[in-house]
Length: 50
Image (cartoon, rainbow, N blue to C red):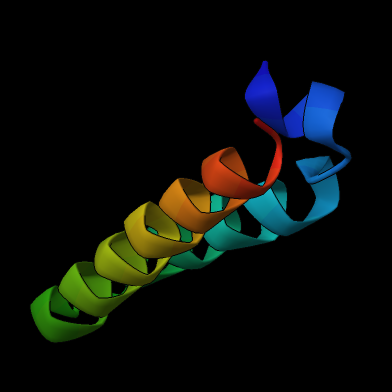
């Protein structure tokens, strides 16, 4: 919901797609990096939309 209101839907969807691709590739390190990158970016976006 936040992504749509803040105009970040495209970015958030791309991050989720990267997480899914990493999972499909069964690349644990890539999954961890993608989740962490998404988490950090989401936190920054939330700060920017307050």
